[in-house]
Every structure is written in structure tokens, then in C-alpha cells.
Length: 411
Image (tube, rainbow, N blue to C red):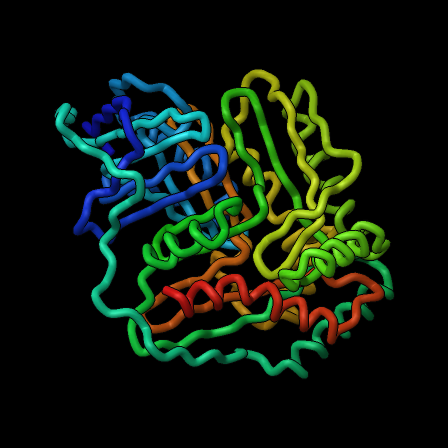
């Protein structure tokens, strides 16, 4: 990172990613989107990664900046998709060229160079959408496999309900692993762009082969403002307005789902509160559509006290929330290790970006897929409580998986 220099300038139009570069990272949201190409540096976090997040701030602080723009997300930015397991290493990437824009219309471009800044010419002509390096060939055949049989997975759910009924924990999240085999490699950037079209309200990302469209904001920090939008409690969507409205009403009135949701809200609120001068959570959840399913969601927003924490400090404290792990945390994680029989990798881990000022946004890495050559590995998880029905939970995993499977089929 020594001798790196960053320059940020205002862009008059929407930025455009250069062609011919497959090293694309991106994180888009309705509020603020940041993406980049090339690689100026990488930042490795030893295991356990939550104990070493300070290394990201230290590395970014070493990059000299000379900016016209000082908006959150400008200047040097590090992107990371972190493992679900806290006791694992992690890696962040700092792109060479970084682009950003906000919902209010602010736009910028940062270039990081060795030794001195590069001049950005006034004849630079951006476009409205990233022009990414897409492959000439796309998959024509796909083979979907369940890594574990439906009967075996349902037996694990039943075992989890018995553990919960016996006491010691109130909820555990069990995920089901699926594998997609294709005749051609799936382009991460093409899949990312497809997801942004299909789910414009989602938090879409592509980082080192990890691609997704998460409905859930783990945490964001913009200046002194902190936000989160925990989700827990799910019902399928059919696309029929009256039917989906009826299911949304049933979801709001479901004691099981409201209890599951409140566990997550309480944990997020209690974790963030010590950092805040004030923090508010919506008293009643809303129902948020997320592709083939809809969730109970509650917005949490507050003002951070000084000294203002780095967004990664908040990430490390929050992950994993009860929405993807369970509650209490440690007994739930132990039961996941016993019953799930899978390495989640980066599924359900924090994924997002942070700048040199400690601002950033991180989604919960659900509705995601890990791409490696001709293989796509994805998970769909459910929150298991004392009265969960294994067959109903199985159907929920199928509904959630459709968000990614449908996009893969249409790349």
C-alpha cells in the first residue's frame, strides 16, 4: 500500500466501468452505489476476522488522497465478502478505479495510482450503465443438485425443534445447500447486472466470485447516521396481488413469525445502542417483498456518539444476527455445526464496502451464490423455532432459492 495516491473528481454523468477488465467489484443499493475495476491493493485479515477489522482502516489511511469530492464512498474504498464463520480469515480488495453515485444525483470517480495521481481528462465520457467484460459464451444447460436429500434435511429440522423444545435456545437457522452445474462458466458480472435489473430495491453485490441480491441491510454508517434493517419471518409470494396481500396479513399476525422477528430486532437494537446518542426502531414491522418471498422487516436508525465507530466495528459486533444464526448466538452456532453438515463459506456473512472515513454499507450475504468455473454453490436458510414444521421449512428454502436460480437461468 506504500506510495499509493488517490484522486477523486466529480462526474457530470453516471460513471462507466472500463471494458476489458474482469476484476469488477460492486455494491449497489437504492441509496448509494459504489463499484470498481482493477486492483490497487488487497488487505488480508487473519483469523478470527472480527478481531482484525482495524487492519482495513489502517491500510486505507496509508493511501494519500487529493479529492474534489469527500462524499461517503469516494476516495479509496475497500470491498469485502466476509465468511459466515467468525473464526476464519477474510480479505478486502481496493480497486484501482472506483465509481460511485447516490440517489440524490451526486457522482464521482476515484483513481488510485502508484507514486502520483493520474490525470483524469475532461473528455472522459461516462455512460449510464457499467460496460463490463462479459463472456462470449453463456451456459445453455444447467443441472441442479441438492447436496443433502430433502428427507435428511427435514430430519435435521426436526432434531432442531426438539433441541429448542428441551430449552437452552429459542431459534436456530438451518441452511440447505444446492449446487448448479453448467456447460459454460457463469459470468459473475453478468449475473450481478441481471440481479440489479430483477431486484432494483435489493442490495446487489459482486465481489471475488460471490454474487447476490440481499434484501437485508446488516448495517450502514454515513457520517454519524447508522442504519440497519433486520429481517426475520417469511412467506412465499405468488405474483397475484390479492393472494400476496392476504399472505402478508397472515405474516403480520403470525405469532411464530412475529416472535422470530422480535428476537432479531432486540439483538440489533441492543448491540448498536451503546454506540449511539439515540436509536429508534419501528414499533411495528412492515412486510417487504423480496422476489419470490416476502419478509417481516423493521428499520433501525440512530445517531452515533463520538468518537464515531468505524462501520466495520459495527459489522463485527452484529454478525451473525439471529436472522442467520439463531439465538442465543453460541448455542445456536453450535447446533448449526452439528446439524447443517455444510461449510457456508461466505453465505450469510457480511458483504459490502468501507471508505477511509469509516463510512460504509454491509448487507447480510443471503440470496447469494458462490461461483467457481462451471459450478454455482448456493444456500437457502430458514429460522427454526419450537413449533416449526419441517416440510413447511423445506418449501421455504425452495422459494428463497428461486431468486438466484431464476437469475442464473436468464443470464
